Amino acid sequence: MSYSKDVIDRVIEENDIVDVVSNYVSLKKSGKDFKGLCPFHHEKTPSFNVSQEKQLYHCFGCQASGNVITFVMNIENVGFKEAVEFLADRAGIEIEEENLSGLEYQKKKLKDEIYEVNRLAALFYHKYLYSKFGQAVLKYLYDRGIDDITIKRFGLGFSPANGLELFNYLKRRNYSTEILLKAGLISKSNSGSYYDRFKNRVMFPIIDEKNNVIGFGGRVIDDAKPKYLNTPETVVFKKGKTLYGINYAKKSKEDMFIIVEGYMDAIALYQSGLDNVVASLGTALTIEQGRLIKKYKNTVVISYDADEAGIEATMRGLNLLDELDLNVNILTVPNGKDPDEFVRKEGFDAFKKLLQKTDTLIEYKIKKYKEDLDLEKPADRIKYIKKVCKDLATLKDEVKRDVYISIVSKDAEIPENTIRAEIDQFVKGFLQNNKKN
Image (cartoon, rainbow, N blue to C red; front, side, top):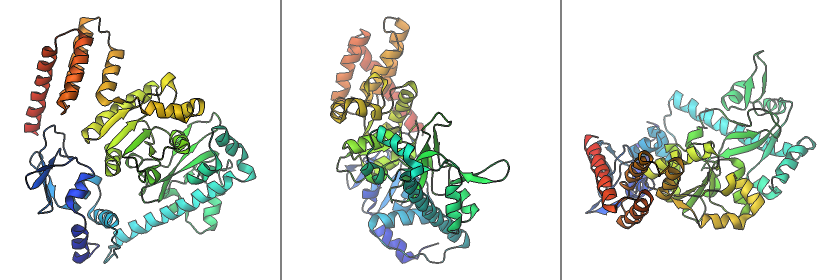
C-alpha cells in the first residue's frame, strides 16, 4: 500500500460517494438511497444503488459493489493508488507517499520525467515557430485565421524540418535517448540512428485536465503523408482517454461540451468565442472519453465533419454517449464543411445560429434512416419502422415519444397504434435481456 490508512480514510471521508458517482451516473432519490443505470453493464432499467448513509454502491444486475475508491478504480480503469490520488486531487487533499515499492517508484519517476520532457518540447516547438525557420508555418496559421493570442494560448509550435533539433536540444539538457523514446518524441531509423518523430510539422500540444503536456499532434503543411501524426501510446498518453482542449473547456460556465473532430476545429471555435469546445483526437469517441465528458458536463453537441467518415463517427458516438445518460444533440454543418472551414467562410454568428438548430439524438437518427432508405418500397419502410421503434423504446419521456410516434406514423403511413405495439415489443426485449444480465 502506498498511503497510510489515515490518508485513505480521509480521502474516503472527504469524497461523498453520491457526489462522485453523480459525475458518471444520473442518480435519482429512491427512499433513503439513490438509483441509476449501472455504468458497468448495459441496462435500460436502473439497478444501480448508491447508499449515502453507508457510502457504498451495489448493482443488483451485475453485482458490482464497493466504496468510492473501488468505484473510481473501475470507472476510470486505474489501480488503487491512482484512484486514491484522483480522489485526493478532487478534494484538494495534499498527500505524501509512504513506502513506495521499487516498481511504483520507477513508474512515478518515469511519468514525471515524461511530463517534464514534454513540457520542454512544447516550449521548444513554440519558440521555433517564431524563429526565422518557422515563418512558413506561422504564415500557414495566420492564413487559417489563427492569431498570435490563440497561438500562445494553445502553445502551438513547429518541429524543425531537419529532424535533429529537438533531439539534440534535449540531449544537451541531459535527457537520455531511452526517455525520449518512451515519451514518443523521437523515432529510430532502420539504420539505428534517431530523429525527431514530428519533423517539419505544425505542433499541437495535448494537455490533460491537470494541465500536464501528455503528448502532441503534428500536421504537415504540404502534401506529405500522413497528414496528421500523434504521439504513440505512452505511460501518460492514451489517445482514447483524453480530449483536446479539456484543460480549458472544463472551466466553461456552459453546462455543455461541443465536440469536434480536429485540433483546428477546436481552436477556431475557441478563438471565435466558444470556450467549451473539445476535440476527440480521431473519428470515434470512446467510453473513456464519454466518462471524461460526464465528469464535467451533462450535455454535448457533436459537430463532426459532414463527410461520410464524420457521419459514421457521429452515429457511433451518439450511441455511446446515450448509454452514459448524457443529453446528446447533433449540429450538422451545411454543404459538407467542417466547423473550422465554416467559421472562416461564414463567420461566428452563422455558427451560433447553427447551435440553435441542433437535432436531438432521435431526430438525427430519423433523418439518417430516411436518407439511407426508400420509404416508397415496403421492405425499406419496414426497416425504417423497426429501426426507429427500437430507438424510441429507449426514451423515458412519454411526451417526446408521442411526438416522434406521430412523425414516424406520417412518414411510414401506418397507424400510431401499430408503432406503439412495435415499441412495446422492443421494451419487453430490453427487460428480458436485463434480467439475463
